[in-house]
Image (cartoon, rainbow, N blue to C red):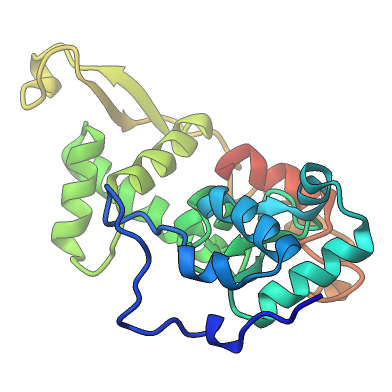
Length: 248
């Protein structure tokens, strides 16, 4: 089988990919495809079409009707040419997902803001919850926009998006820390348009809650747990169920 050209690693600046109707969306290079052998070209094209979601290798093998040995060999060639990369998916940690190097993993794969290196950042989640709680207690009743704006005003470098805050507020409602209500436009709701969904502190919050519910705190083998160990958050079914409840 003919060897792919080393020139595929770094396409010259004067030979860009074909133009796209959306400049923000990467476009597969016809020049690169033309220099790839048949099997590499098929796999690269298929995985490129999957974009920022990538593809699980068994799905690639099934679609291309390749044996495990052949698919592994072809994938390694494409990775060595820096056309494909292997990425992690927080939803399916044991699955080997491949993606074209032109793309970045989707938020669903990485877990978004609250995950770091594929693991839930409980400190970041806790800090965001405290920030939201402080805004609602200060205002008495507030919409997500009001909470978001208040946090960014107090801490411009926080970097939270409106979707980040919406997700955090929803977990606080589930934990009965905040109460979701609709504005009447009167009394405590004077500053909020009638009918708008907003949030206020629960008079007597339930004990426990999301952070207290994390199974690590009561695990008898916590001292043996480590990211790369036999006992690990990435393989713990209890930790997985807890994180999926709130963040997936």
